[in-house]
Image 1: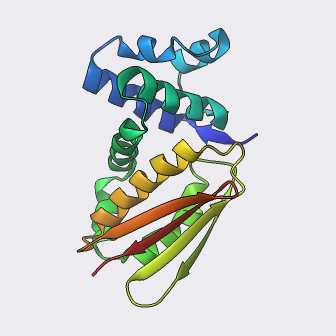
Image 2: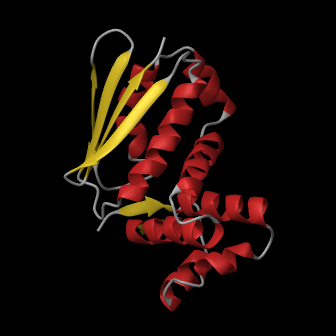
Length: 180
């Protein structure tokens, strides 16, 4: 079973409380097991947590505070990218291309997850393809969340006419990006 850094869960907590009010996190946790509720109430950013817990919290947020269609996951992914990427990162990203950023995500990934690996290839010009395999446990909603996170990273490079798409195939996330 893979693990996720507590930073991810802490950003989810912060986003929920900021957008929906203090105490709303408890509403989100209501559907989790008592042990998961306890862990989600005592999040430490430097600690590692079961990735399945992150998946279940994403689903609980979307179910309890959204329409249950995954839409809130897009907002959370973008929010987390903004929180994770410091001013220094943003200056650096303005000097890089989306392809380079996705290639570097292979290294960046290990700061937040201990499962899965990125394989990235440039397809010529301003087109890149990334494939994330080996995430255990895998959740298609997690792929959507990552797509939103990476899309925001691409935006921070200053890419124009940005178009991305992702698909889930054989418990892998495959993402394509094109820009001018």
